[in-house]
Image (cartoon, rainbow, N blue to C red; front, side):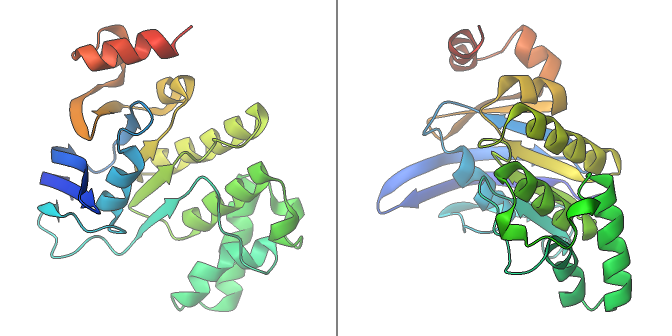
Length: 232
């Protein structure tokens, strides 16, 4: 088991402090959704957890592991598609890791079947819709069987049908044992997927609470005000 631990983490860019003294524990197998107003530092916090950004103070630890788990993945709001087919995009990470091409193809096709995209396997990935590309990116991550998956607004630019398909893929990965950490602005999505809510305000963690408790009775004034503004 690897708890992801943030000990007094801060991050500043060009003298501007974005994160302040963040203390956080993400347990293996959990699904944590990060909420907060625009400019709260949500995406920066996720990039620090993933290792794309180094904290300027404090430290990020992975329990007793000497380094982050080798199998982790991150999906961004706008997925990057390689200049190859859908199947080629999904199989790429496996081939890079030394999986024989025939086995990589088989595993990629299985995952495409699971996300409802097998019929597009030979289509150039870059001609797909935004929602389809995000599902390809999710399938690409799923083939690697990551221990932890970071998602930064993965459904921000897709229609409701695509959103539900992507959510189903995320839920399936989580159900198979992948730890999920996700930023979203969509409270309905947070209700559907989250076990825990981490609320960030002005670069500080106001609370980290089980999702039902957060939506019924948030502990911080900042979170309560946020819900009043965002919920109809």
